[in-house]
Length: 127
Image (cartoon, rainbow, N blue to C red; front, side, top):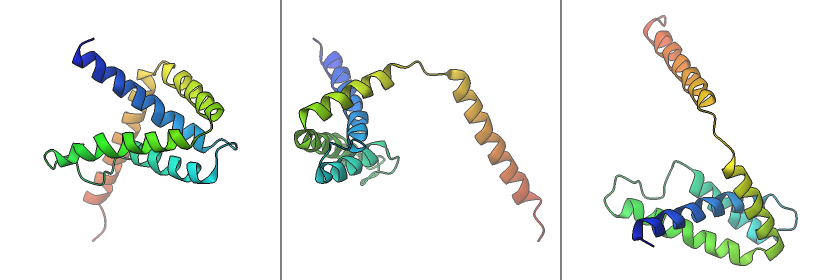
């Protein structure tokens, strides 16, 4: 396998495991410590806010390349095998679903309408 194929496969597994950790955190069979850590890792991985902003050269991406995989590894080791397998199966099925471009367009149009209304209000507000 080429380096690019290996990197894409690794990224796909990381994405699946982030979603799986989210589902595992919601499972009643998950121990409370693993649940708390799973919520923290999933929130950090899915959050647009990073510990170190991405525009800082090297360090900005280093936190994403270290914190998320190490957090996932720790959570995965803490999860009971049955919970992990169920969560991975659920994550794989969720990630397989087709994505609706029409829904994405509608959401973008709603946000643009909201932003336009906000700009209109700001320009025409009473002083």
